Image 1 (cartoon, helix red, strand yellow):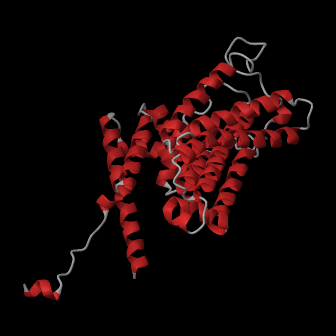
Image 2 (cartoon, rainbow, N blue to C red; image 1 turned 90 degrees about the horizontal axis):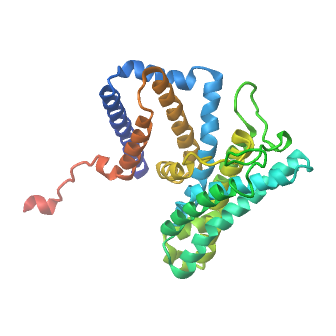
Image 3 (tube, rainbow, N blue to C red; image 1 turned 45 degrees about the horizontal axis):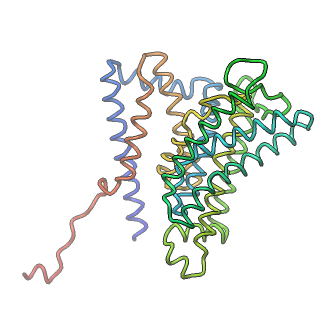
Length: 351
């Protein structure tokens, strides 16, 4: 009976969130002086209008899937990693260094080493906050945010110094050789191999969290650290492990962005996907499958909003507003909870 009630409540919540989101979106479109029906038509045309546009959704979703997974793993363990942006940059820099210096190695070796180096560097970058939290109880939120600034500015320094293209004057690295790049899978689109890598990580993280004792320990620590410790589970070990895994996943997103999309290192390469990942993980309730679905939906909304902006001049910022509305509604879902009036007990009735 209880699962049935919970299922019914979940459906009601989803319907209410959809209604409120559509109502807010319609109001914003009307405020822009546009026709909502025409705008929504262009919105869906931007998503499903052609194969290249549809493939672009998955291109945009790829880094969001990986950074969202990273945040979800950390949040599940009670480690609030807000540093996916900095970890993304560490992965991007690592991939650039490996790719530009292993020009004589076979392409597949260079790609594998770039992915491994990126994962390790991102994981170690996240470990700084994990160790400070585990040993000295310093807020990981503050530390990871500050580490973001350090990583972003260090990347800015690197593309102006030791990673700057010697043949150019723009702050960016030299182009990475074709052999070290992740290939496209669908001709005439940007649908690349990195998307498959992201999907593999979704399955791996799901299996780890749901089917292994290590995943059980991570979730136990996140639910109740004291109870986990009383049952012989090492809280410090699991926080450090989740932080390393979280940072590594976010860094792989940076590696793929360099090797599949930009083909070089440059400032602003992340487009703030590390911060967006926090929202994606929260909306997905830290579920790997949920992260995949939300990341793809978010990317689709961006594609549709860009179509509206091009065709009708409607600000694409509407999508970010709607995402914010959805997050607030999900976090405040208790306000949407449908409650039946409690039946009075016989004792209360006699009174």
